[in-house]
Image 1 (cartoon, rainbow, N blue to C red):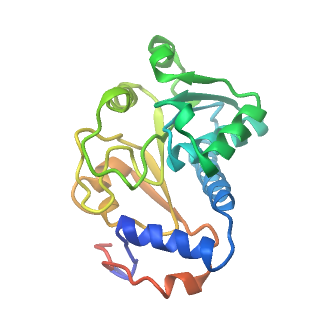
Image 2 (image 1 turned 90 degrees about the horizontal axis):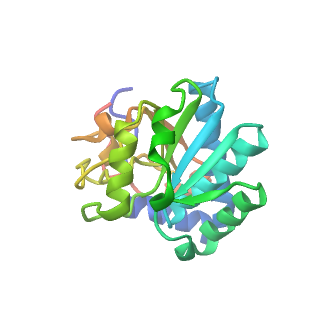
Length: 232
């Protein structure tokens, strides 16, 4: 029924994630692998002719999801490229494990500052899908630096775009664009739907919205009440 879908603030989704890990023993890296798999599966359903996953990865857990996606793409015989937006030295914990997973799949990681943008613009639109895995739900201030440049590059490329959890630059609580935001054709979001995805600038930035609960137990959701039933 309209209005029955639950939506959460970023802090609430973080709590759902933490409860799944601490009270139900689901490893953080397991959730990251599930997120990567859910995104890759959705990407392949929407763009079945994809031959190249071009992953823009940040230095946090959202970037970790992107590294998993790149590894999965390579394992399935697709070309996979990672553009690191931010230092890979900052990758830690689960994101570091995902980085090593991608490196084990023999994926070359190119710093954004060394990325050949002319090559991006020359890619055949029907074969390459950009994966936006730069910024997650924790963003509070305006994007800047290389991330801003990468967002602008993605938005001007004539390629399909899949955002991981939330388009980079979109506030997950308010739906406001924080300086600039990726305009995705599809966003695959996890554990809890974010309120900002369906209000203000959210719908235009997210495109098609796909949800996966990553097999988080129902009992976890009983401990966190959604902020809104949403407008759907």
